[in-house]
Image 1: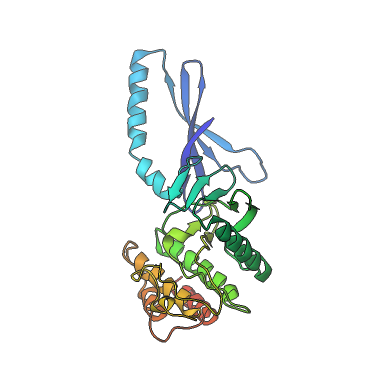
Image 2: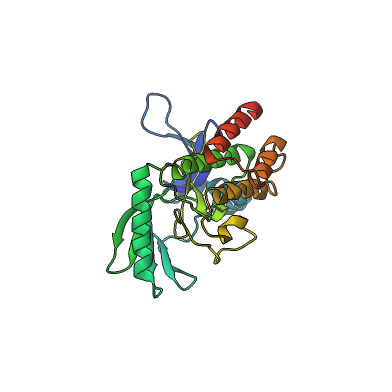
Length: 297
């Protein structure tokens, strides 16, 4: 059976596929196993005998009709950040490869060794602090300036209010621990650096924060290589604190407000407050956000 893509609802999970026996091709729906069973439930949808000309024509028409739902299926599946096994050169500093189980990053800039050392250090601190909802360093080859990171996920924006609630909750949970004892600041929290883990059956959905190359502790220097329209004003000043990450969470919400129709005003107001001059700590922000979730759910 060859799976072409998942079709997902809140309660059901099915994969469109087919199998062939000689010229006889059968389209099927592969559904989750019934209770107390391990084998998936295979439902035959339609047969086509490709030995017959008129059935070949009907088969082609069925494929054309199925193509209509490809875009809808893609919205469910999402996009991987990069194609698998194809090296991508970014900013002339690193080569990224999406491998079978993890992400391989090879640094090629003059400061490649320092960058790998920095990542080894930061991921070690994330592990020591027990920071949730982040990727992890599987292996670092300092001689070749290579790091392997996991888990893999899907680079896509939340497509509805529920997914936005899930993703912002994951980010704030991460920041509560990150900003605690011996604080670390990510400094570059944007939707491209937040990925969804690919388990369509999980409710709530699970999101993790990646790309820690710009993270820093305290004291710190100004991060003048970042863009002013996507980052907090304080990040361009020395010795800033967690307010830079809180501002970024507010921007996540305000950005999502552009494509999520009917987003609750409670959520958008929360986003504005996170970008105000009087920003809460991560702990207070998470507590308030959970109250908002309860009120609108």
